[in-house]
Image (cartoon, rainbow, N blue to C red; front, side, top):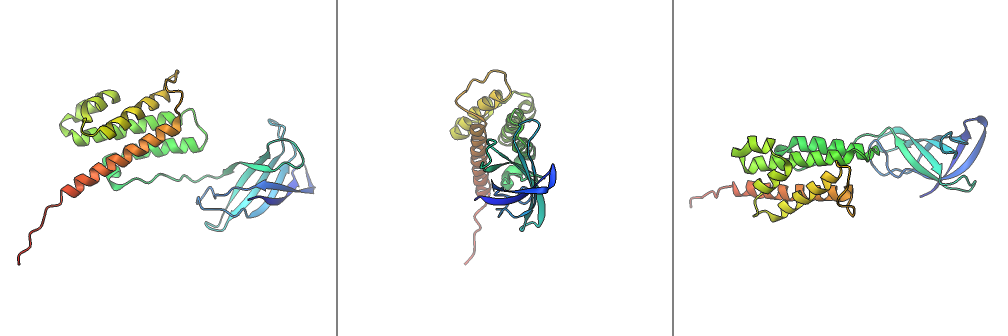
Length: 234
């Protein structure tokens, strides 16, 4: 969707211009679909850094009834260029929801994972991968403690790779494969040299999500198996 915006020049408030832009399609505050409602718009003819025009638009969201500011810029300095969204602010964090089994198993995993996701959303691409790697370690170690409660102290102090090899049994090959490969990709996010150049942070996140799914399913099965058959008398 593209809309025409009447923008006032910041350098000359008596001059305005109709500009075509591709507006934000989601509200950064409530994260619902957004119809591009414009309250006001101002154009900076030339940014000091990029040399391109900067379009500042004040939007109103009818869903949460709040205003937010979006910044747009053309891909070139042509007069007929469509202005494209750079970013919107303020941004309200939207956290990933996890099952009650994961919440009970590893609350620190959830906290760290969502902080890493926030870092990624803010464009902190050089550090968010390390956060996902740390979140993985908490999830895996808490899972190992759950399945091996007598080894709690050793699990806490051992490296992640040792915990995977020693405490995640071969009877759970899917979980073992997922956490092993997730750890490899996570290590790439913390080291100078990347070993798996054909993979990136999206693969790491995908593997962690799959790990969460399989651990949740296993704990759901444990919960179901704890239900005893109730005998009724005729």
